[in-house]
Image (cartoon, rainbow over all chains, first blue to last red; front, side, top):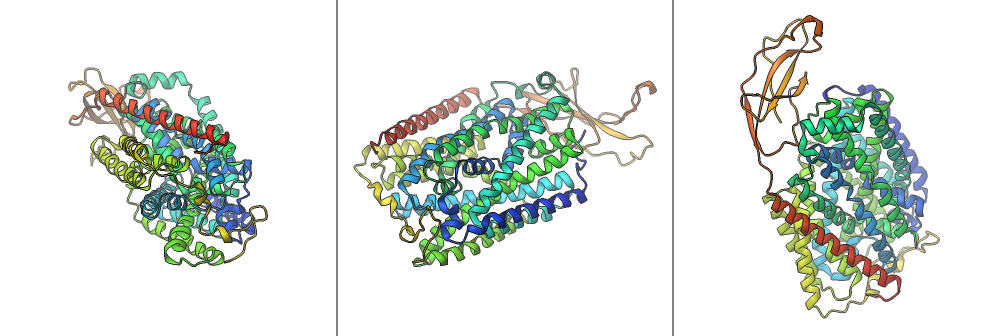
Length: 490
Length: 122
């Protein structure tokens, strides 16, 4: 068996793409009817319950990286690589108590950058915003590019058409329904992804047993089973810290903490972590199974879908197509919504049009989503193929944000200069490690340096921050009543 | 990733493909068949330290066993690659550093959350 052959005809691919696009836009319109106020559009009325809350966290965290990178890491770094990826679930578990704290301290908050501005001031806010936007844009671009590549690999639909359509669909329903539409579609997508993965793994286990896979690997690729593969050993905690940095700092997760009803955030994130934990192990298993199944993988980043599609054939390939589309759409829509919130609230409302009221920001938010979609499309169009590496570059940056956020959220003593020094020194030295040793050390070194710097700043600081100041968000006075979801303009 | 090209005069009535052999010995004393099929590349991973050698040749695909020896072309020139992993001391050092960092985050968040639940503030 070989990777070269298409698993679906382009005609079937276009039909599936059309049907799924109509479904998501239809559901987006249906769920987005309530997204009239700024709170409704950006934060789904701050009234999201446990089922929708945990489902949106699971669907968002199952990205194309989970379906592509987990099998790739298993194929390159073996069992360690597969387990290393699954440790990213720790971020969801640990964000559970943070979500409760964030909701309590900032009941009318909108973004993670807003927290940094109120807690540490303008300079830290600017650095943090730059890190956040860099991370969000590279993630967004890598997702849209992955969409185009995967659809081409599975069905032969040309890259630029597949990428453009996925992006256009996500922009459309996010534009119409804001976070209401994103969370609603995430709920359906999470179910489709989880059921699809269980069926795929079950079908593969019926075709080839674990003993055969082990024997094949032991004979032909012994280090993939070895405990002592150095790159994989280094990657283990690096992946974990990258995941923690991503979740702790990104507005994708903060906006959901603001959007969930009081008392829902902590159990929703813990439940999401539990549901997400086995997903990369199942996906990674596909990568390890490739040699035993005799599938010649040309490009390791498409190993998962190609192995699943080849083994299942027929209806199974339709299932893989749906699974891939759902995992991409659930991440792209969340990124569009959360990043546009950052730009609308912190850049447009915070810098460009400081006196903008809620209604005006709501209107601007839609233009920001369109602009963000357009920028992403332009960056994806040349299909440069190196953006996955650029996403890894964000590892040191997000790792360096872990301790400034933790100490700022829970302690009164952490000073702004300490947070700034931690962010800058951690990012810089993490990037050095990334280039000198390897991509699998960037987040680890970035976190370590930032931790040391922040610890020193905390120890020598005499500051006593007043947490009441965090409640004074820019739109706090004009925010709607969370229980009714209605608002008024300033 | 080893890659190869088909010969220009390979328009034969039988279906030709490629056989890729891998060995840690330049004479291919103990060789493994890494790939057999129509593709022109193969992704390789999971090899221990050392110098590894590959060679490729044209073979008839789906050749029936009862038809005798599978027709094949001559072996290509040998290509080699040196695999050198990072030192284990560096790997375990960074592993230990990662363990300490994650433990610090877990302890900090656990204590902070307990204080918050008790209503003690920070």
